[in-house]
Length: 231
Image (cartoon, rainbow, N blue to C red; front, side, top):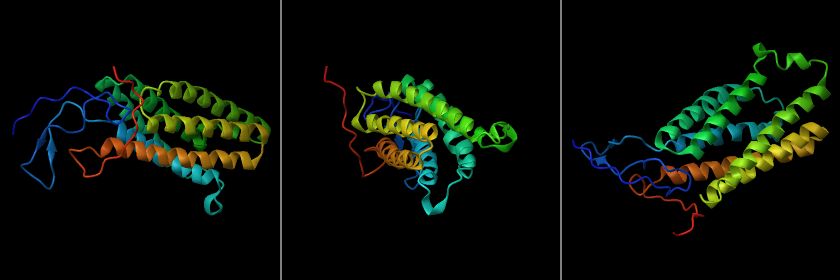
């Protein structure tokens, strides 16, 4: 088996500048193709991890099937939304994609911190026992901080793709609605945040799939609508 030269990194999926997933296929074992490359594309892992954890929490936020307590998402937030996204972020640094590294590492940290809030041994919720209004205010400040960060990241997607911009657009709306729900105590605003979170997750799934379904690995390709101007 011999390794071929890797092509110049592209952002064909609209969100990554690292090495493409394929281009160095060995057909010695057709049922399980082997790719020789320095780095694969970590963005699909990061996006799928983010989307899956966001979808679960957002369904809880809209009280799907009568669920109101979000504690079941703790394991998902630690293992998938937290660890997998953090790993994807570190690999994005290695591929030279500063945006992807910043986004995945930061949101991986978000999910780890969110899980700790609901981890009994952390004592965070216990510190606000008997003070529901103070807890709501504290959570509101926590969420509004992530709204600010997400809006900053959204502004950095305007030369990427419509798909990626949509992920961050719906995400910053999700954070502002969830924060408003905590500050006002209105359940309907909180549920609206959950609904936008579901939309965010679906768009993130689509964007991740667009990076996974390449011409070399799939008969399916998904358009992301590039926003980059021709030089």
